[in-house]
Amino acid sequence: MRNILDRIKYGTETIKNPLINNEFSYGKILAKNNLCISCGKCTVECIVNAIKIETTSDGESIINIDGKKCIYCGNCVDTCPESALEMTNDYKMASLELAGEQLRKNIYKIFNRSLSLRVVDTGSCNACMSELSATQNTFYDISRFGINVAASPRHADGLVVTGIVTKNMKEALLKTYEAMAEPKIVIAVGSCAYDGGIFKDGGGVYDVLKNILPVDLVIPGCPPSPQSIIFGLLKLTAKIYKK
Image 1: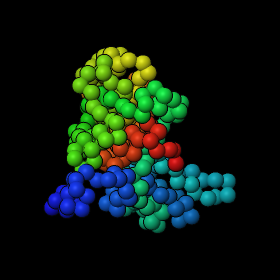
Image 2 (image 1 turned 120 degrees about the vertical axis):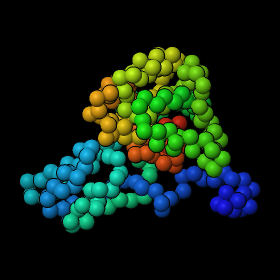
Image 3 (image 1 turned 30 degrees about the vertical axis):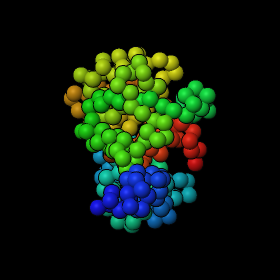
Image 4 (image 1 turned 90 degrees about the vertical axis):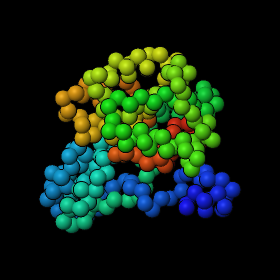
């Protein structure tokens, strides 16, 4: 029904601005340090160790949340007795790594703001792959921004990786990376790809992506929404600017 209404309103099923505020999205977790009593319940509840509580010399509690590790399950928010943590709907969490910062400065000149990406699932639960697929449907239509998926790494500018890197996929990942022409862009989609998520200690796991290949862009989430993915890719291609 939504698609029909969009077609009537816009003349197409494609949303005009995919980066509009989405009240149904999950996003950054805000810490209200003035409410924290250092009980540590949130750190115990966090299964990926993304939360650390530090106490300053003045006795003030500082909550540090690693957005790249976080899987945004919301358990920490629910368990905090003082409501010191709040889940927002700000999905714009993608961040450029050091190499990516330099790449962003030159990407217009190198790729003319157009990207062809090769996607490799190195061991995900398929949630991130589903969200990646959604970016190519008629609603989000990421191809209108000059971003397309290549069938071969030899035709790709960047490598998109989802999931923890399993032992069985390590060789395939490296071969795909080596087959790409310079300069090579590596994009970690989802918390598992960058830091292992909830699967990092599994018996079939080889390592996390950041320890194997130089990562340029991190799009956190479990899984990240199509909007999060689009925001990250546009941030990399300099169609939007770092905020």
